Every structure is written in structure tokens, then in C-alpha cells.
Length: 367
Ligand code: XIL
Image (cartoon, rainbow, N blue to C red; front, side):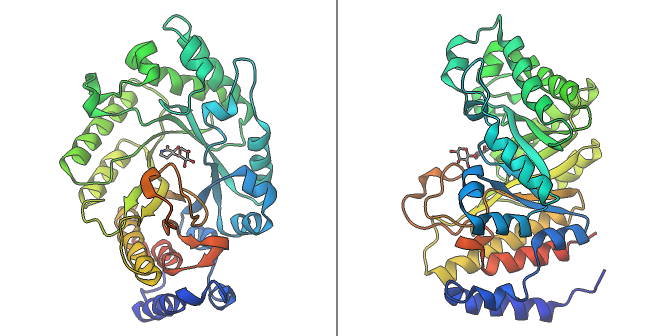
């Protein structure tokens, strides 16, 4: 590996920061020297990519070209959630996902699936017609149909998403989620077994948020997730990876801490891979002009990636979206109408300070 060249890094970063306000009109200035993140990642044994929107792929050629150039792995942000992909008992909406699969194959990208079993994004027909008596059949059939269709094409799945919620007071810290109410704690093993049957080669992931912080709540949640994963492994459940969502808050010292590195090593010691699945940096509370906000967001990306990549346990990094959009929803829904600068690229794929620091973190991670 090349030695760390702090001078070169500082020069490019400062140049990018100085240029940032002008990049909207002169993106080519930075594009000339910026290397695609997918290439940089692969050179260092990592995979980098985005959560993507099939409607944008269909309609926006700039988006399409940019995703092809920068991402080595893609995941549909919403298109595989139950309400979207299975809106009626006898109807699946596979077409948008099929188009992402075709796009990913054409561009030699890997693909992740998100998500098979979650307390959110359930269509009304599920919440109205599923009972403890038929829940097992409905859940396993959904998983068999969706995973089966993409067998050999979707390399890893978020099988169960966000199952831990300590405030709910359930055994094991499990969330009082719909599937838990229907089937009890056994729904988790059931979901992984069904996914494994449908594609024995897929990497099956448990995905959650709130694991990043060293706060008392974050520490307790990590312990509950670790215990869940450990007991699943002991029972022989096919779980292969942990997804750490990584929705961060800019310049917040409590957003993440060094305890996360210890946690990732413990997860890795269980024989699991670690994916950073939904990385973004909420800057809605940050005051200052665009230039200052971009510098703060970049700093947060840098500290976070250096921490998690420094453990040597992380194989994959995906950001939750391709570039900044004015109205971001979901990960940080209370942002209001102000433009957000949460992602690694500015609108239309324009390079910004976070782009440079992510390139640097991917390239210079400790190995
Ligand atoms: C969010 C999407 O980004 C939004 O577009 C959607 O309206 C709601 O869901 N954790 C997850 C993701 O696992 O699926 C969520 O995505 C963000 C939080």
C-alpha cells in the first residue's frame, strides 16, 4: 500500500473545499481528478455503492451514468419493501426491481436486497388479514417468492430489519413488531431459514440503526444485537452479516464513538461480515453557509469511515441515496424544506468535500 500522503490529501481536500461554492457551474474542474469511488474501493478490498431509485434510473440519464460510474453495489431504497413489491395478496410488482437488476448486471455491479421482514412498509392487506394462524405461511411465501425470483442475482439480503427496540420491554430486547405479535420471537429464525432455502448462496444480513453511538441507549442496543446474533449462530440460523445503518448527525460527538469499533470486532469474531448499509450525515441542525456545512459533513464522514474501516471488519459501504436532494425523506424525516447536504455528492453528482474525504478514507483505510 502506498504511504499516507497527507500533503496530497490536504491539497486536494482544500482545493475541493475552496471550489465547492463554484462547482455548481464548473463541475468539470473537480471531475477531472476525482476517481470513481467503486474503483478506489475495489482496489482496497471494499465495495462501495448507493441506495437507488428505479424511477430516477428510468428518467434521468445523468443519474444513470453517475450510478454506473461510482457504484460497485446497489440496493433499491424502497422498491423491495413489502408494500411496494407485494401490494396485494396475489400481486407482486417486480418490474422496477427487474430493471435495477438488469442495470446492475449491465454495469457489473453487485446488488443487495432490502428488506424482507420489517415492522414498517407493510401493506394494509397484511396488517388486516394476517393472523397468528396464517402468519408463518404468508411470511415464508413472501420470502420464497421474492428471494427465489432473484436467486443468484441479488447477492445479499437484509432479511430482518430493525428487530431490536429495548423500550418495548420484550424478552431479548425484541421490538413489539407486527411479525413478533403474530409469531413470537421465532419469526426471526423462520425468516432466515426461508431466505436461505430460496437462495442458499445469498449472504443473509441482520440490519439495524442506533448501533453507532456510545450513549447508554446505543451501548444497550449493541449488547442486545450481539446477543441476538450470537444465539442465532448457536442455533445454526443462516445469518451471515450485520448491517450497521449509519444514519449519522453532523458534528454530533454522541453520534458515534470508539465503542463501535469494539462492537464490530465482536460481531466479526462471531464469523459475521459487517456492512455499512445506509450511511448519511444529517446536517439539518447545522447553521452556517453551504461551504461551512459541507466542511462539517465531510469531517463527520471522515471520522466515521476512519473508525469503522480501521477495524478491518467492514467489507461494504453504501450511502442511503446517490446525491443530495432538497427534500430528503425517511432517514431524517423532520428536516423541513431546507436543502440537505447529507450525502457524499452534491446534486447531479457534483463533487463536494465529502466526496474527497470518502475517497481518501476508502483508499487509506488501515488494513
Ligand atoms: C426510508 C426511505 O429512505 C424513504 O424513502 C421511505 O419513505 C421510508 O424508508 N431505515 C431503513 C430504510 O431500513 O428502509 C429507511 O428508508 C430509512 C431507515
